Each structure stands twice: as C-alpha cells, then as structure tokens.
Amino acid sequence: MEKQIKSLLSINKKTMKHNFGAGPCILPQNVFQQAAAAVLDFNGLSILEVSHRHKDFVAVMDESIDLVKKALNVPEGYSVAFLQGGATLGFTISALTMMRENKRAGYLNTGTWASGAIKEAKKVGVDVVTVASSEDKNFNYIPKEYKIPSELDYLHYTSNNTIYGTQFKAAPVTDLPLICDMSSDIFSKEINVSDYDLIYAGAQKNLGPAGATLYIVKDSVLGKSTSPFLPSYLDLKLHVDKESMYNTPPVFSVYVAMLNLKDLIANGGVKAKEQENNEKAALLYNEIDSNPLFFGTVASEDRSTMNVCFKLHDESLATEFDALWKSAGIVGLPGHRSVGGYRASMYNALPLTSVQVLVDVMKNFSQTKG
Image (tube, rainbow, N blue to C red):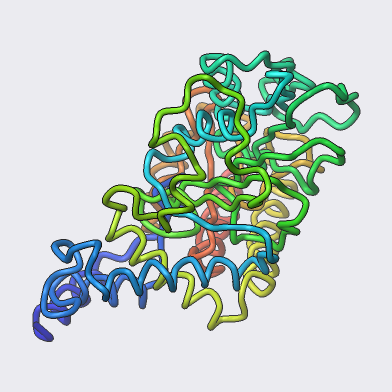
C-alpha cells in the first residue's frame, strides 16, 4: 500500500497545477495524502466502504463537529450538523427552519446564489422582501444604505459572491434573526458566530470535497417553524437531535473535512489564514490596479478575498494572454459566463506562490505589450 501511495504522490508532483478554479476547492497536499491513504486503508477497510454506524466513523463525525466549534469559536447554545444537498438545499432548509408567524422575510440580493435563496424561499411560502439589491449594476457592489422592515421573521444574506467577486466585510446590523450562506468564505476569516441564528455552507470551497454541507444553528431557534410543509429531511432539529446521522452522511466528505480542519488549526487557525488570504488578495489586486492592460470589475471596497474578477481592457489580447497563463501551469482562470473576463479563486489552500505566478504572468504580458 505504501508503494501505491508513493506512486500516486509522485504523479501528483509531476502534474501539479496552480488551481484558481471556483470550486470544488483545492486542499493542502498533506490532506490529500492522508485522504488517499484512508481510501486504501482507514481501519482495515477503505473509508469509502466503512459503515457510518461504525464507532470509528462516529468518532470522525464527533471530532469534525468539535473541530468546527474550535476553529470558529462557536459559543454554547449552538449546534453543528453535517448534511447533504449543498447550499442549494440550504436555501430551503434555512427558510423552513426560520419561518414564524409573519411568514415574511428579508433578503439581500447580491448575486446568483442570493437570487437562488430568494427563489426557494418563495416556493415554500415565504413572502420575500428584497431589502436591497445590486442587480442594477450586474451585482458588482454590495448595497450599503437600506432600511430593514421590522415585521420580518429573519434577514438572509450571502457573505461572498463567487460569480461576481463581491464580499460583505461585516455582517448586516439588525435586531432580526440573521441567516447567512457562507459557502465560499467560511473559515477564510474570523466571524462572530453569536451574530447569527443560522449559518450554512457547502463544504467544497474551504472545508473539504463536495458532498457535505455544514450547518451552525442557535439551539433556541430549532423546532419552532410554523411551516405546514416540513418533510423529515428538511427538519434541521431532527438532524441535530440525530447527531448528523438521521440518514447515511457523506462519509468521505466529512472525513476529509476533519483532516482539513486539523490542518487549519495546527497552522494558526482561522486568524492566521485570514492574514494569509488578505496578503494573497492584496498581491493580485495591486497588480490589477497597476497594470495598464487589466481592470477589476467590482467596487474596490467590496472586493472579495476569495474570488478576484478582472478583465482585459483590450479583449483582442485574450488569446495571447490565455496561452501565457496556461503555459505557466495555471488552471481555472476563466470568468463565469455572466461576467466574462477572468476569475482567480483563491481559497484557503491556494499558496501565495501560486498567486505570484499569476502576477508574474500579468507583469510579463504587460511588458511585452508596453
């Protein structure tokens, strides 16, 4: 087995790329190595075939939940659960969980995923009030001045917008229960969990491989939904009560998330990672702003540290520029079709050296065209 793993790692080193893809995310190399070993032998069985009821995996689930609490300083009175369905199912689960007598809720519409949350909330009977929206400028900014109606069950927002490259720098200030979809920036910066009643996030950006969805929920809001429609799988209280074992959980995704959280905490935790992420973002944004060939596509004060969107002033140069970054071993750089241009996604595991490679390509390209 050792020879097999070494062979796999040798191949990986030869083909290593600078992965700026928007998701699923890259992970630390040692996490890949441990996960690869567990695929061959977790406890005498592969992690892919072990029973989720086996004590060895129950221990993995328990540790994963504890590590989430440790990494984010989750206070007493909150529970953590791992489900499936991604943030897309989270749109529905969050709305059902927080629906109260008003059956009316506020949403901040800052992009595709926020729009998706609005759509799904309406489908389960929530009267949605779009409190603020940046759709008027193709979601290239975060709304700042808006009035939040008082007679709402909750306020929902999306912390980071992967497609458009905008990010909330602070949570909205409100007395209402607050829900946040943190799929693409959770664990990238410190947050105050006590500001929120419910946080949900797909694993596949900064937590682990696609398959698991993380929920952090205030215990006092569970079991109070007024929705007449609440299938068992959409009842978050049931999942918390069953300790994320109501049905077969995404075993491999949770296992790798545990490995990744261990690595995060061992290397300074979220605080250290936030500093590193800020350094990566500053390096690339500085190049975009100083390079005459490129420009950023979003308001400077709302720029995401996770997803950097930019374009060429002269799009006729795209073919040449594309050939350069591809030859440098960069992958995943094209922007989303609704924005165009380029999107450099810089999740936690992307090293500063990879960002420097992209910056060097941009500098060199500018010099050849200067």
